[in-house]
Image (tube, rainbow, N blue to C red; front, side, top):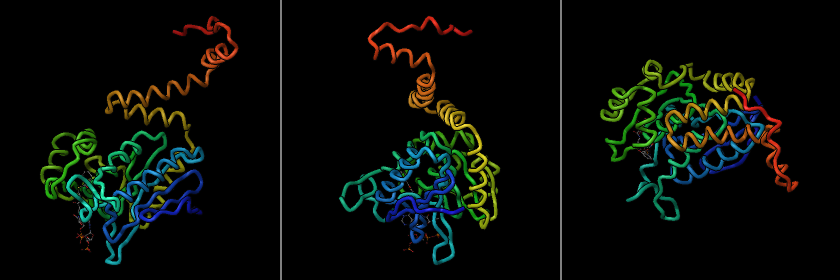
Length: 275
Ligand code: 2NE
């Protein structure tokens, strides 16, 4: 695949090729921990991928290995810039802006695949969790650390985790803060498959290519439907937004707009009340 740089950032890399976007956290010296700037850049790149009609799948990954030979997808919030009310940037304002990023990844109508090599820990674990699919390298390590480091994610990090691995396992993961290897993650349904690390990106590209052969509207409606099951009114808004989009594409929907523009009553009698 011939990756082209889509935009240049400080903390992340952003590439595109053949309908696939690849977004890479590039702070291997911090096990790819995110600071507010990292999250702003990720948000920007994910927005770009969302808006680009040529992109159907986003691969989300972490740069590595670091000079010590270790890999990481992401180790969560950068603890060295954690202030009294969140993670602090040069502007001095404390933030938890990763929550905005979680919602964007979850609601964007493109398939997001996490490619996890090495650590997916803390808020980094929640990021892979939020993705539609996760492909793990055989060296992947998963876990939450919140109660150990004075933090927690009681949003998707708790409730969506419990939807995926079950209540007992989710409570174990958060209460004990243990680490789990790729095989254990596979067994608990936390990842879709495990591949040798050298094969991680190729596997992600293969999955992306298979998805790109499918109907974009079917995939976007399915993603919204899976979300609606968990996301209450926000999930229903997403799903219903797709119904509106499809309605706009019908003659019946267009008749309403056309009649308004032509200053005449709409004629909906030509359309059947289907069973
Ligand atoms: C990831 C893990 C288990 C890796 O351990 P190891 O032994 O392989 O590496 P080491 O030596 O701990 O880390 C290598 C370098 O990366 C930095 C370390 O400080 C170290 O730097 P130097 O000593 O070489 O200068 N580093 C690693 N993770 C970092 C981090 N998150 N922030 C800043 N620097 C980091 C091990 O490193 C680990 O447990 N890391 C911490 C994981 C963690 O607790 N993350 C925060 C959870 S809270 C969160 O993410 C969050 C939330 O709960 C709610 C909302 C938003 C965020």
